[in-house]
Length: 259
Ligand code: 13P
Image (cartoon, rainbow, N blue to C red):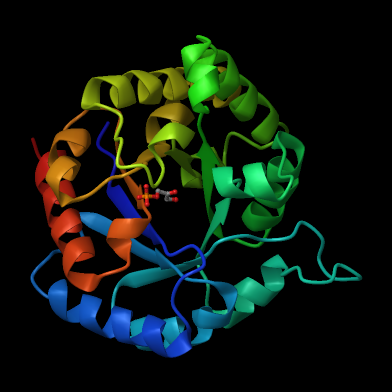
């Protein structure tokens, strides 16, 4: 099964409206020589930067995503953003359940599940993050944690829409630390995630779901990671904040995926 790779930049809490616009303008230039048939390229700025980034990306094939979504359609949820608000602004993707949200903002597998249902209901492409902490890995609980995150996060989702979901495997110990999972370690986790997805949605849907790797991915390691059979892209933090490093990483990812 060949899956089109997807490389997404998670800008986290970086870049104001003007900086975001400038980054996308520069990225368009840097990516002039790549074929977007080889890779989906997405940037996920903060909410207040979405408008200027969507405008800057309008005449390009760069997709734009948000970093969170609320599950309710509207109402008394101060500080939250609904699916309709994202869709009507031109947003196409949304990151759900990033480990920083689980760690600092009380996100759980249950809230991930509610947000995922809202995103799918609105036609957004969700990027659902899973991954174990260092303590969980050292305690040999990686598979149990991933299995729980998938079982609970994806509960009640129709297998017919599952191929449209993107999963991001982000081992928490590799995020922003410079410690990347080795290609073998990452591939093993991705294969396990795909087998768990098959348990939930069936083999055919699981084979179609794209699984990104995230955690200190950069141009130097992107090629080898993407040459693994179950690694279908990347969710990039630090290396996505500069147009030249992100573009270089995308080119390496495409090259790796063709190995
Ligand atoms: P870094 O690439 O900075 O390690 O961040 C990864 C990440 O959390 C992307 O969502």
